[in-house]
Length: 471
Image 1 (cartoon, rainbow, N blue to C red):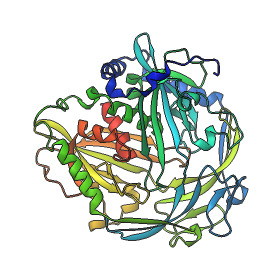
Image 2 (cartoon, one colour):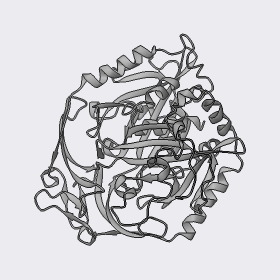
Image 3 (cartoon, rainbow, N blue to C red):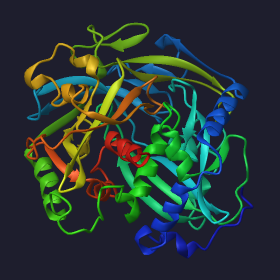
Image 4 (cartoon, rainbow, N blue to C red):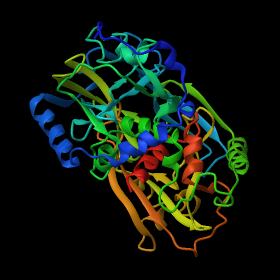
């Protein structure tokens, strides 16, 4: 790798908007499928067979390198790096629960989730990785070229260096197509941020059995398969496509700049989101994990007595192709399959998405744009009135027309078998055009525009945004 020549260092500073050809190149990549999606699914299965992986639940006392801090009960690593599980105390005037405490993941490291791009036979391809994550329901999924925290790529674990990370850390190696900081799950992480980046290379890249070049069309086809394209790949590609004007104009959506096509003007969209961010207070403070009321800890888990929301467990991992082959760590295990649903309706002949101003305790700016519904339905089986998520019953009913319905995995490096049902449903013209204050009808281009910015569109909505392109 060290001897591989880079491209012109000066080109690294060019923004996507400075290259009018990017939208055309992405369109061509979305249309080109040199091999069917089934072949890539088979390749991932072959990597699972060839690379031995074993993930075993273990008691906390057997988690080498991890312990509960005597002064707080926080679950921490002996290096002081990677991440920790502590407590948070949240107060807000949003929703039906004004105050609560919970465990949450603290991770100060900014992770790189980066994809290398390269023109092959005149078509833009992306270097995707068959990556093992201990929390994946099927062990190996299609991941970005690099998916690594700074603790990992700086080798705090004393293991091997993350392959290809130099393209994202050394100036002049490649040219930027998109580079933006984004949040992760605000209910499970406190103020977590990742660098979502795509870099284009022109020189040859050293081949490896765990990596393969794919077109955008192939990746979009794979979104119709459950648990194949991992969360990090989905969020990076959503940010990339947000930088391309053509991708905002899906069939029936109208041109992004068409006069009168959207219910709200760009100024009104920004004003609505700013007003929602200003409408609520959210006060969070770190508290000792031992002080989190309503949660209990035994030898094998941190959980609620009623079994709702999530638990924290320990695992021991043996993986043949990771930077470190053997390690232990905690994982957050959700209590059921989540739901991220978008309601779609034609307004003025243009497809609009019903989005929601979503507040989570780990949000950096109080509120981010989220799907119409975002919850784990099992946690609300007995909930009524304000405690039941609005539109949950609608999106699960027969009154809607389903456009997309696929279960996708959340990030497997911190979560254990975390699954979210991604659902896009269409309603008819009888559905109210004037939604409640926390909801807003936006066009696909308008949501894409917000996704170009940091901390405006949450990770569940970004994931659904990419799935929309698979239609």
